[in-house]
Image 1: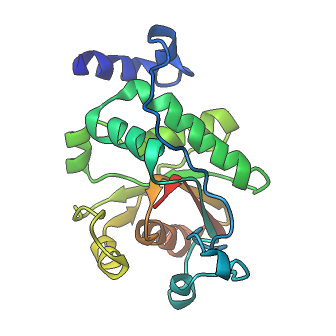
Image 2: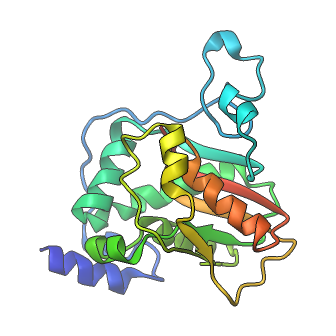
Image 3: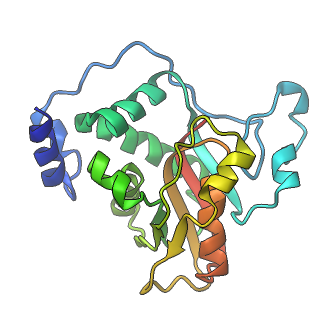
Length: 232
């Protein structure tokens, strides 16, 4: 069955909701779907306790200046969103991709509909991890969004250093973990463009920061924003 899903996934690329024509909409577990709403940090979307609703930036963003203008996520990384991301990312349940695509696009419309996006850049996987998973979720989400919103697609970054699994690391360790992990590819004209980085989940923003720094410092991008499905 996994081989069948893989074949169908390859056939589905470029065809909107192709799998939904073959499979009926799957029944999802009765888990909460929590939108990420203010109050949160203007820069990284880190949620604020109600007593700090008047604040504009979190302590982390004030202590560590960002190369990206802002980062937004449509949902909190828990409940249904967490389960579906894990099913697709680690268990090859590709028929659930339409849910992730819909959630990403909702976040785009909510937070970036008025932003002048001139190109979309997915967070890359290291080739070793790509071979293990068979696909890059961030890349597929970015391609989907570009088709839906008629945006230029710039796979301008490559991951040149395998990194430790980020999930269990704190911010300083994550920052060190991704230092030197990415490189700018040749052949992409990014100068003075407003670019949008796409990933599935954002936790400490270390990966987003590493990518944004390269796009601005090496690629000459004017502004960089970040969009993920969920914020941890």
